[in-house]
Image (tube, rainbow, N blue to C red; front, side, top):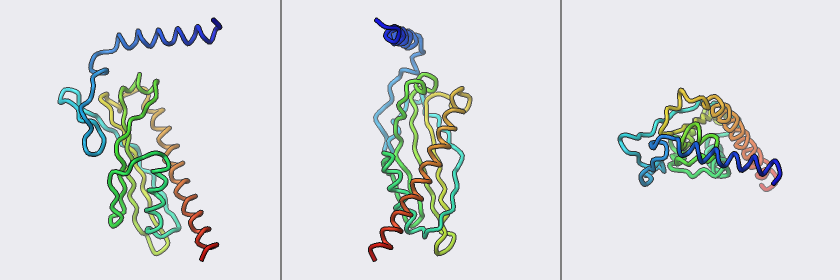
Amino acid sequence: MGSLGRITLQAGAFSLILLAWLPLPVLARDGPPGPDGLPRATPDHPWKSLSGAPRVDTLSFPSGEVIPAARRALEADRWKVFTMDAARGQIVTTWKAIRHPILWLFMGKVRARCTVNISPLGPNRTRMVFQGSLASHRDLKRNPMIGTAMRAYAKAARDWANDVRRDLNDQRRLSATHP
């Protein structure tokens, strides 16, 4: 067995020992999902949520074009829309599990969701506010991984806003070539 195989075997054995050592609440199962996808929790094992900083962007497009582009960008990132109220300019996704072994070790089961609020600033100017939230059974505010998670969130929010812009520009180019 090569050195990589020994390291993998040692890491696997370490993971099993760590799992056996973890307190039972970390390994507890959640109830069936609620209507927004966040599993129902027991009273002694509640979800604790934390919202990321809102990311605000101003776009040179009418809000009627931004709302569908925002939805398409969320769905392209494999988010499921829970509610979409075009009249209020709000999109909320369902909670989805974040599956990453290191995150699970330090933060336990983690779910995430996105909320987008879109408001017109004028006929061709729109304010778009993106905010992500995390939920876990553990205290996220004092978690040693929260800084890493927030940096990843900031990058993902920037990337998503860029995807919305790209989609809007593509739609504009398509409509200009096909009047």
